Image (cartoon, rainbow, N blue to C red):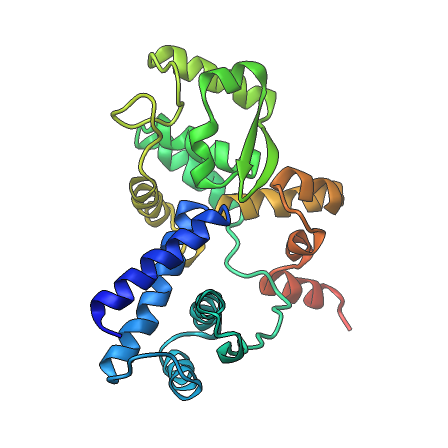
Amino acid sequence: MTVGDWGNVLEDFKGSLAAREKSPTTVKCYARNVGKFIDFLQKNNESCPTRQNILAYKEYLLGKYKAASANIYLISLNVFLRFLGEHDLRVKTLRIQRKTSLNNVISEEEYRRMLENALKKRSKKLYFLIRTLAAGGIRVGELQHITVDMLKKSYVMVESKRKVREIRLPDRLREELLTYCAENDIRNVVFCGRDPNKMLHTSYIWTELKKLARLSGVPGEKVYSHVFRHLFAKKFISQFQDIAELADILGHSSIETTRIYTRTTAHEKQLRLNSMNL
């Protein structure tokens, strides 16, 4: 196939994903990942997928990426091959040993330091943003649903990945946020940018969080997409030991997904071993 031919196939592939009600973000991700395979074919003067060049591509991925990242590309490729009707060409993903520790989880002390430094910087928006993520166990993208109306009625129903879940915040935090909104003439999205009806851009949020982490002495690897969601989950499990309710709060369809938060960190394991005095 020519570059133009592959372009048409990719557009049809994206259309089929959209027809299956995949989110725009998922469609874009699959198309980008498949585009890498197409680039690989063209660089090797191959015109169509074969068992040989697919296995060669798998080896290429293994040499360049960690197993988890390579699997993401292979999963996208398998979906694409199914779309093409080439079921027999699909490849096995890599088996990854299940981690026994939950690492790079921000501690409550580090979280408090970030809050204190946000106030020292006179950034109440960042201060309340961090508290909202941690106190509700929500994803950064879900900040768009934290509106003045939501704060007044105490909860909001959110649809994500074809699942509906309820987002709630502690009453004390809701009251403080309502006061903050009144003081700053915020009438719709609480964590808005220049457009009062749209939340801050996620890239800006993470840039500011990284800066605040450095100022607070928090390692950069601990500041990732679900950092405060993970802190919430660990705290909830420690305090209430109710994994089923945590799954409901986080919006997980399977408790197996939630079970990761029952694991201790490597540091916590070491402390427990040390305390046994054997």
